[in-house]
Image 1 (tube, rainbow, N blue to C red):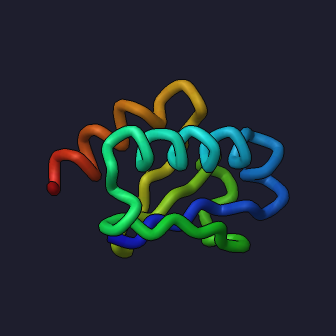
Image 2: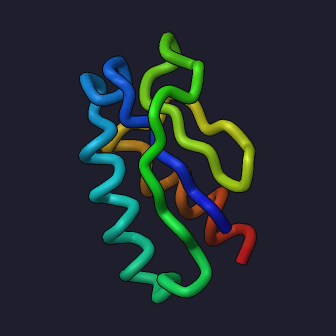
Length: 80
């Protein structure tokens, strides 16, 4: 699975760095380093939606450091 986190200006101001750090931790916690590729991406075109993340092309909008774990469990662990 490929996960991309927007690091454009709007998403950066809304916590994209913290979202990336939390995703790194969750990937390691679940030993998914060989199954999940995490990358930063410049603007994904959804600036008004908060931190935008894509997982295999599906947009996950409005992700926050507080909601990223539940989204990870649903979208990543639910698919494994």
